[in-house]
Amino acid sequence: MSAIVEPVARLIEAFGRLPGVGPKTAQRLTYHILRAADAEARSLAAALVAVRDEVVFCESCFNISTGPLCPICLDPDRDEKWLCVVEEPLDVLALERTGAFRGRYHVLHGAISPMDGIGPDRLRVRELLEVCARRCAEGDPITEVILATNPTLEGEATAMYLAERLAADVASITRIARGIPVGGDLEYADEVTLVRALQGRREVESSLPR
Amino acid sequence: MSAIVEPVARLIEAFGRLPGVGPKTAQRLTYHILRAADAEARSLAAALVAVRDEVVFCESCFNISTGPLCPICLDPDRDEKWLCVVEEPLDVLALERTGAFRGRYHVLHGAISPMDGIGPDRLRVRELLEVCARRCAEGDPITEVILATNPTLEGEATAMYLAERLAADVASITRIARGIPVGGDLEYADEVTLVRALQGRREVESSLPR
Image: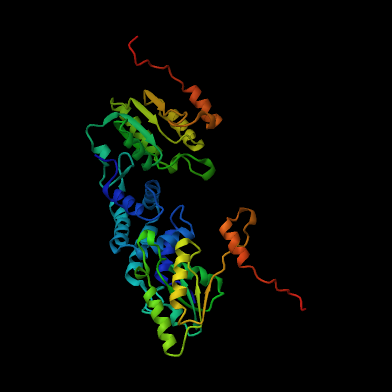
């Protein structure tokens, strides 16, 4: 006989399937739910179901969306000639928070990783190549593709692969800068980042008129 | 215009209300749910609702239960004369895993903490005192109450308070041992724990016949 009743065991198990949630955390979350306000538990349950029922991927950029096209693809103020390629919808969110990019996105939903058996066919790569080729053929080419995959082994491999495949259809293919993060410390930066920071060095622009 | 669609924002917010889940973790959990198998998301939602609908607190010991009495209180093999007082249902679980205790429990649902404005009236203290007094009056007294509240300031205060209030009705009131945890290191133990370990020292029992 177990000291733990079945619905509680089930919730602990369900929480435990979430990434980064171990058995102890799953227990703590479950007991929080047991003692929390009823509305809190039910709103979490409703939000879970709503996300699965209402959220789809944008047919154009594969970002998350509630309709066939996401708010960014529907926005006429966005510059169609500027395309930013990212791995995950979370990356779109991070870039949007900066407000520094006013073009469109393309979400790959992962990165090429031969070690994990993830090739370009498992990602939204075909769709990206198609849209660039079609726009080029229609005489309305995308002028710049920014490859904003993560600066990891997989992200770099994906960027290199895409740069090669897109070369014929896109005039400018760029990669986001890799270097010392703002607020970071040179002393603690790893060698690869330091090499990138040196390679990516730029002329200092004087704020004073020359 | 936000880059994030409403159902997703709502789920991020709902996850963010869980203890120990910050905004970044809430985002990661939400995107996991978006990409997980449909059954996984729905089973978590169902488990949340089930816990709120089906789980109550045992009328006798205030442990979690699906009926008026929890499985432990219903178990005739449990020794009624032996009562273990704990702060939380999770503590019952931890003790049950040991299999070393075959009595009944009483869950206080917290500890006395004047700093947080939590007095005995906010806990299941009255019910504990009542059951001990009633059993004593009925001539079927509880012979031992083990105070297994946490060895924290609040847990110790609660144990001392209960020991005083139960003295008249219970023959033996004990406190769980505090000392160096098994696998621990004397060198790194704090002074209070070391003092407790010394105070709680016991005669070594030889495994050889004398």
